[in-house]
Length: 592
Picture 1: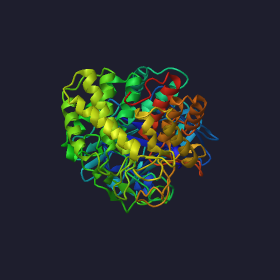
Picture 2 (picture 1 turned 30 degrees about the horizontal axis):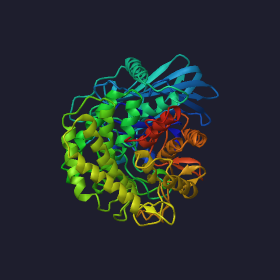
Picture 3 (picture 1 turned 60 degrees about the vertical axis):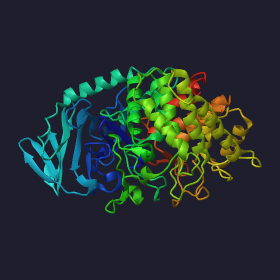
Picture 4 (picture 1 turned 180 degrees about the vertical axis):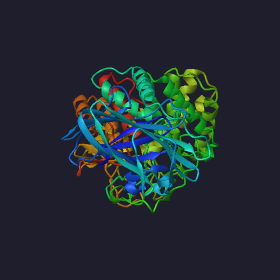
């Protein structure tokens, strides 16, 4: 299956990818960052999957999300009939629960069922045992329970069978998770679960305050962000997957099942501007808890529950998506110094105040601590927003975001009466800005450069106008945008940079970075280039799959999605760019 052939379902604790052919090839239970029990996505069917598909090989499949929901409906047409499979994860269930409901629409359709559970990263073979009307698949501390309306047999540590469904008939398959030493999960009521799950999503979607021609695209993007948000903690993960390659057959395969501080301001702004103040406040609260670390120990990413451990390792037993290896779990970027995260977090907290979110009593104290530490390290080189693995450099965008951190704190103190050394912070912000304009700008080239005193280029230089450090119409910004168009655009889509010239420490190349396309569309809008902004935005909308999801990157030659999927920063970028194109542009700047 291509990456774009997958759709997402979830319950605010974890998420699953459902393929167009009826196979669930990825599921981590019970949490987003738990070991996958279905890992066929980055391996083979032997690494775990749950497939319900017509036996007829020429069956035609179409699908959609039920309007305003995260409930997936796949319709299978065969020579003998038509049936639908409805997939969802129950939002209100006490135990993690995924339900697949097969319904006959016309004639008869024969379905093959294959449930292969492989706990421990697609590796551990479970003991399958029938207990009354239920099946239990258990290994070590993990257990999955299946409640099904049809007869299944154990075949080589898998459950399987064939079932014929006629018009008007229905068969439900409910899998639930519990620790093997805990009580069994309750038997799900599929009918009530579907009713309640649809009701939840439709009420939630009606809260969307966005209007205009892009409202539907915004709604689907926001539902996706909600699916990637922890119902317990408010943390929002970057993607539900690990090691989907940035280049097919390549080694740029990373685990994105964590919350990045980098995404803070972009995400909060999208939520609050669309009326999702509760989600924005919970994301803000998660950020405040994250920065409660000692400032010297601040990480760039955390688990959704705030956990710090992200030790990176490779799973040699997994073959990789289309052979792209290694398959990694954990992410060593957690240990990097990325100065930009200070700006993104403090800009998000300033936005939260500007938009009137309920105050957090601890936030200002923690912000002061962060700034005190930042004052001692801001001149140091770092690994930067792109998390290079080749060493530390004085990246221009890192210093831009240092300015954003100080400027945000300064404006928070002035606007909301917080105690702060205002004169000192004003001088500091001005010093950082002057430093960027002196060392991040190349007079002979007439544009900004990727790192101080260099001559390279990367797409994060768009943060200069997006933060408001310089006006988008400034000639230096205009020249930088022109250079980006000349050097970093391919088939109209932007790349982050051009390896190996950028020297990021990784082999090979990568795809176009979808989120940056939305940043560029916003900058076009800020420059008054409305036709260019709309053309690029429509081009990016065209990259979505048939159910409105976006991946991290796009392979312009193969014309396929690549990278982890779906990618929160791309979905958030869609929302912010759509609002910018529909509005007056007054709230396009992170700090202003």
